[in-house]
Image 1 (cartoon, protein in one colour):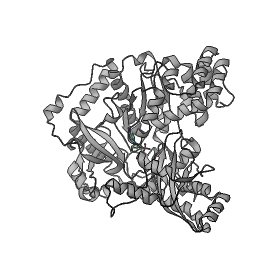
Image 2 (tube, protein in one colour):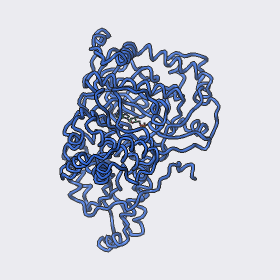
Image 3 (cartoon, helix red, strand yellow):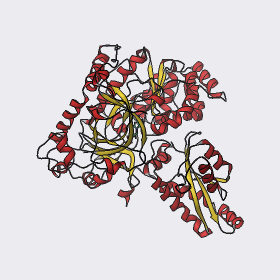
Image 4 (cartoon, rainbow, N blue to C red):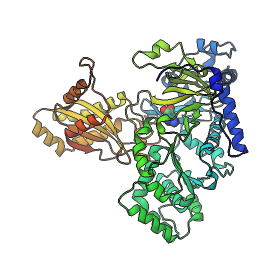
Length: 610
Ligand code: AMP
């Protein structure tokens, strides 16, 4: 993309949001206008506010700001950090130290990120008032959507939303994912009635910690109100596909309940039973209709066949989720997919002001009131980390076409913290830059919210290949692929083996089920988010090892070189998605093996168990 210069006047002439669907929306849209019109001033105030309130924290005192709250002093004194740098402070808070270490306001809980450190979810400290800030960002989404899709007050949204398990840190603070925290908050549970934002799922179903009961109840309620449904969604694309898979597996039970008007005994949670029973009446006609649709071998367009009034899917399909776009298109018959917001456990960032655009065009506008944002120039090729460490760019100063890594300073006490997301500036709305989500740094494999990097994959392969040693066999080369053609998706790892006395060794390996054990050993070595998705959520399928015949990786190199790679610099790609390469690998597979059992996982962190 070419770098272009946009004058403030040109930016000011950008189209205004409107007309709003109602007065409440108008107020929210005015807020967006205000925030995006002068992001630099807002950012200056946000930083001053954060530095003023956290001036006496142990962390900021270390950097001698001397009461200064300006950007120059802050940038000159406070270092850019990663999670690992903050680990000692975070551990102290987790262990119960209540002094003002990072934040002057008490840490109310930890949010467990899907990003990991040493194999465990990162713990992000948060404070009570952050809930208000998140709520504020949520409140902007429907007013923007209403600009593009009229009539959303005439029906409901079928959203598959889930809570996950939570734990306590040794010091007694709750640790749970940010969405679990939000759904369990009064902001969500006691939200005022808004005709534009009515869900088919009762709160009790969303808040039920049992994944099966929660999904069953939400699906049943969605079927019962099928003609009211105007939008279908989940947070991420993978979540919506899991719901479709659930329907494939359980439609027979669901239609029995619908026909009889009575809820299966499998739903044991009393509050879920009460909420579902309230709307469940015998409806043999509906049962027959759903059965007829589901019994058809072909599930193409199933979403619009069952919920014919659906105008769009509300799911994130940017970043790692882009791999699910073709499958969602298939099941929805090509409905638009709206990616409405961009957020993380550390901080909620912003929203998509054109939510009905094509997924490839999605840009997020960071709301300058959410935190203080800086941008580390990101180059392809040179060590941008070092070169640019001293030259972080402010939100208002980023340039169109350039890529940056996001660095945040939050009200909850993260200072100049590297999130690990790479963003590219696509343009401006008013004076606020808009960003395409490029990728998360160092992620090799991802099926759902799991993020496996190269080092983790390497460690898993090493740990599993130890099982081959007694057989005089070893792994000479490997690569991997996130297989998402089936639901749930799973990791495929291609192994080329070196065996001495091939036939006998192969026989012994097969006899002892060694390759299957290797699959499980790899899973055991992967991070907690992966293992939780496998065990508690069932959102990742068993890991598969495909053994390829000797010489395959050399062929892979030949192929890369024929396409212009340099022989000297060639490195085996540790993850592949390019179809011709996958075809080559698959055509050389001699045997395929799956993990025979789920790996170990418990809500408790392994570090605490030791
Ligand atoms: P977590 O900390 O588990 O909440 O994960 C947050 C991360 O998810 C972000 O830092 C991004 O890498 C990713 N993410 C969140 N929203 C989006 C989005 N709209 N598009 C692409 N990736 C996203």
